[in-house]
Amino acid sequence: MKLRIWCNNDFGPNDHESLQLLRERTASHQLLIFGEKEGGLTGEPRQALQHSDVAFGYPDPQAIVASDSVRWVQLNSAGYTNYDVETIKQALRTRGTVMSNSSSVYDEPCAQHLVAMMMSLARNLPGALDNQRESKSWPMQELRAHSPLLNGQTVLILGFGSIARRVAELLQPLHMDLMAVRRAVAGDEPIPVIEVSRVDELLPRADHVLNILPANDETRHFLNAERFDKLKNGAIVYNIGRGVTLDQEALIRSLKSGKVKAAYLDVTDPEPLAPDDPLWTAPNCFITPHTAGGHTNEKERQVKHFLNNLQRFENNEPLINRVL
Image 1 (cartoon, rainbow, N blue to C red):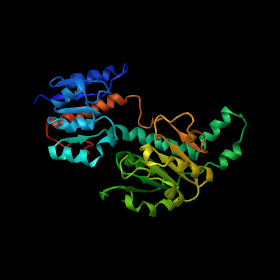
Image 2 (tube, helix red, strand yellow; image 1 turned 90 degrees about the horizontal axis):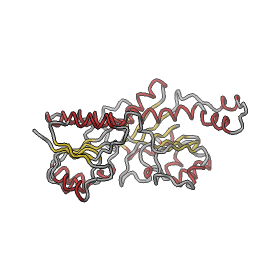
Image 3 (cartoon, rainbow, N blue to C red; image 1 turned 45 degrees about the vertical axis):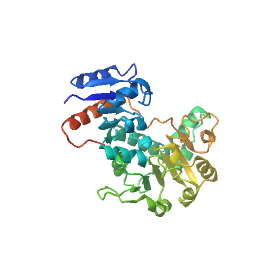
Image 4 (cartoon, rainbow, N blue to C red; image 1 turned 45 degrees about the horizontal axis):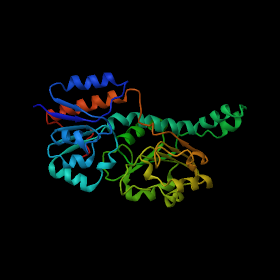
């Protein structure tokens, strides 16, 4: 059956091969390509979306709800904040529209990025780099004395989707004590997991808190002053989920007091972070500009993931990374 495929997965000048692959593998269908910012809410993109069977990229949720023809939405991101609204989800369920995201594209880079930061802080690499850039002295004993082994330390993971699963796999060889919370416990998790409502029971045990929570009404400022106070002294907080899930003012206070030893943020609220934002100069706060999921062949992997799911959709097989 010939499908009408609407796409606003933006292809830059270095993504020619990925775009060519998409065109070749969808040649038996009708492919309509728009720019990333053309989400389908107005004009030609909206009109095209109204008569499409499949949407690939990140179409505007309201435009998807308004379309009577879209049967499958393939998001090019792991996050789906704008769709994680009960009215949107119920509308799509009622119409029978399914949605999948790209978690399997981003679980590996995000997990590697997060573990790299954990290990760099444990080995005091930021301190060594500061020394190289500034005093150029030789603080060997001081750096060695503040380079703890990760073995045996306790990690609490907030959220347990595909990224968290990969993080757990990468940390297993270090023999760390891993535990997690999630909205709905499946029972097949490879580490101990409890419902997110019981997170306060685990916070006092954690040496490392890895925040991979999505953004929704339930998770806004999930990590707040009250929860920072529940942490053991010297815990380290990491956030690669969404910036709004962490109260940044409360984090700054906890860093200044020494309650939280260090923080690593790949996401902030807002993004980009203003040059004069106090987070930049907060003690032991390390920031990367939302790069955790990035990788050299990112666009190619997005396209291959979509094409894999397209074949499954054509054959009425279960979609990978289905979220609705």
